[in-house]
Amino acid sequence: MKILKALAATFGLIIASVAPAQDALESTGIAAHQGSRSILFVGNSFTQGERSAALHFRWDTVRDLTNSQIGGIPAIFKVLAQQAGQEWDVVHETRGGMDLDFHFKERRQLIAGSWDVVVLQQYSTLDRSRPGDPSTTMRDAPSLGRLFAESNPDVTVYLMATWSRADLVFRSRQSRWYGQPITAMAEDLEAMMEQVDASSDAIDDIIPVGGAWNRAMAMGIADPNPFDGIAFGQVSLWAYDQYHASAEGSYLEALVVFGKVTGLDPRMFGEKELAGHELGIDPRVVKQLQESAAAELGFQ
Image (cartoon, rainbow, N blue to C red; front, side, top):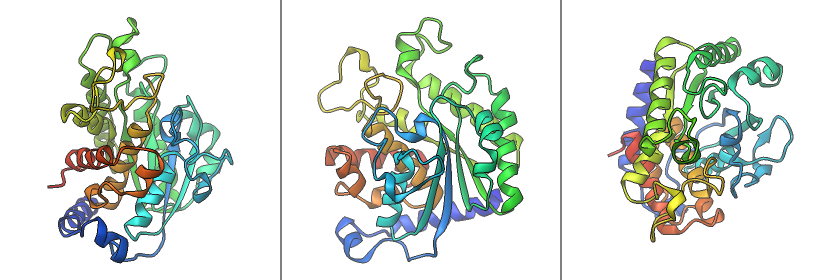
């Protein structure tokens, strides 16, 4: 399955390299119209877009299995896909503060089914009682992957690597990541997710959201320390709690998911992209975040 995925990603790069500009996108579309595919998002507040305008964004355009009127990252993905000429049945099952063990034990019957793609998002520190310990993720992510494969052996299961929490880096002295560079936590999480992927055929790849956040800070798009004020011309990827994602952080998260899942270059949309506009993001920043996502995913 991983070989097929690599071929798909390569093909996506070819498509992206000849993608038309934004004006052409509006009149002709970017990708050839495909039949509808299904994607299920499983996660917590980081998938919901909690604390930002993403939370209830276009909630009525996606299927929420818990009927909580949440749009979040799934709804942003839906808008991006539609603009790219792709039809997706976008479904999600989320609950704030929960880990993958909860979804497997408590929501198993709700999420079991035949999906084409599944995106799994673990708790922000992997393990609430032992932050940074990948043991439960090593157990629970493959368990969920096998559950989905029972209904569709060809399902593609992604594991999201999330971002560094500013509250744990700058304020929580008991934190494993306190006093480290802001990039360290995201790098640790991605490395651990890579371990999970490498150890199990039930997981097909990771989605490097945290890496894209680090890249946005390195590119001067996002301020790396929200506690000392936001530098002029930059944005904060964190919401007001310095924990969850802001509208900009959620938008970047969705761009990385979109690019990874579809194989299409997020830069195809340009500054007039619809979801970014509706979330109230500066068009200049919309374009910059697309560039950060594209660079993290390896688009040239």
